[in-house]
Image 1 (cartoon, rainbow, N blue to C red):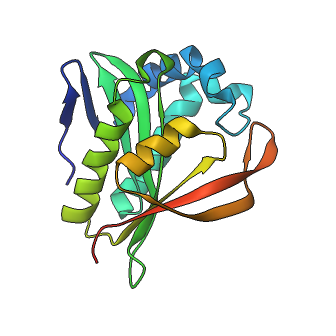
Image 2 (cartoon, rainbow, N blue to C red):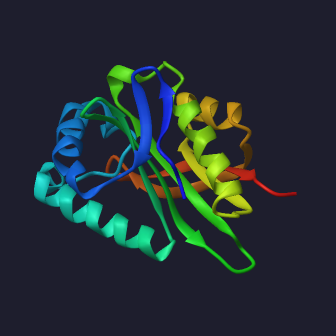
Length: 180
């Protein structure tokens, strides 16, 4: 079970909760331009509290089944980032996919590295996963630094991997092996 963790004096990471919808909506509106280049195109409804409440409920339902762990970075009552350990597959695979974003006002502070380290520790010790996968756009040097600094290895490049900012784009692929 993931316990809330203080990442820096004013920032902690915890599991997402149902009443985060308003704070998440505010964070996404504040970061809409900052995230647009790195995210899928979103319908206008995505930026509403109703959409976020429904999405949080879906992510928490996945969490209840053990297939996801949705995290929030929080500064006081504000959400300043989101991290997801999703697509958890058990059996002989024991893997998951990591995705994340950090509020534009909080980038460059080491928060992503601290959060990824906390997720790696929990994935290894609490979840018993063998592998975490992640991907970045080819020019996302910031996320690439976070992953490499956290111990991920680049394992390839996938052409037209995800539809980001309205077009299919190539991505570098990374993995972290948790148990050798």
